[in-house]
Length: 440
Image 1 (cartoon, rainbow, N blue to C red):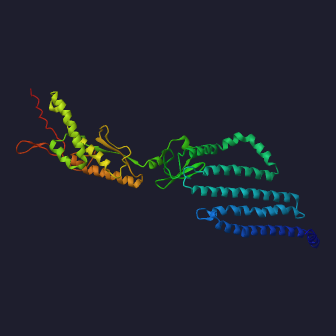
Image 2: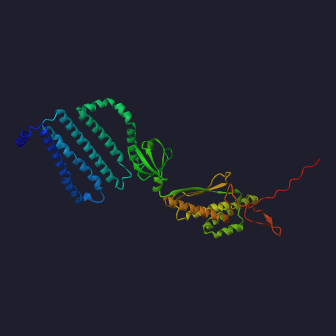
Image 3: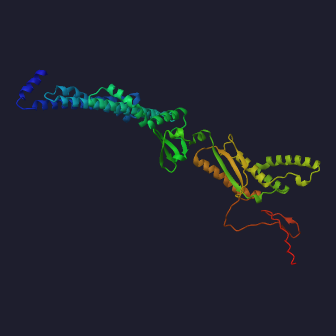
């Protein structure tokens, strides 16, 4: 080989730089052949082996995984040029040094990019696991990439300026305080990411609500510095990871896992429509099968109470009686107890709040058996539709501050026999006329 090169050099001796250009072209051709063989022969055979192997199934991302090997294949021609540039004759030593340095830089950067793609492939395969949402590892890989590319940058600088890698790393130790200040957000985000991953406070797919960051929707990505939330209006909000540790937010995941979504809504009643029930009206309410047990228990309870009062000589005005509001409240409670859309294992209340100028709030506190938003809204609407429709049966009215409906005032009137006849609506007592003042 050396003899042939010498003969070629003697033949091209009359032509300056001809031998150098010829050897350089041969080196580039050798690098191209090495690149062609690596990518079109070795990689094709490796791809066929991967397709036939158990790891080549549809459950793995072949395209992502095979991007790592072509990047590594680019190292081969760079190594050929780096090793062969020194045998090219008549090249300036400075040019040889620069070419070798550039080849080394190319090799280091290419390997780093391949490792980065490999980490992406590992993360994608990990995210396919059923428990990946509980413990995402994307943040850790991002930290590894940051450290790797910092070291690569230091190595590139050391190679280009001809310095030792360890000397530059030692010199950077004096800049630790500055680097800590520069990477303050990264360090805080890393700590927050580790804490979030360990305690599981936020997972992919969680519905979180964070008004301070204008975030109200599903978590679609958890990265090192930010967490991406798709809001219900289809906009996207990025929340700094450290904010989920320092600030408060609401996570609705436990509501879904708990098997029930709360209904907490009040119906405002007109207090003037609340009254005692007459015995005939109580018997009338026995038509409702949901009230049979309540009316029987109430009747026995009131009879015992009133009997004790009568034995002590108390006036009948002190007796306890059934009200239309109490009966309506018992009806709603039994209605919820028998509703197929209500979770009977969780808290259920039908309670009154303090009366206000907006009427008497009768609040429903219950949990639906389904946490799906649409199903929940349907169950809640059906319950209050029924409550509003059944109110007239109990002689109760909903309070409304304003209405364009005609005023309907029902008075107690006397029938032809002079007896009071009951009509629905509030009872208005007629006040006696005020006497006119004396003229003198």
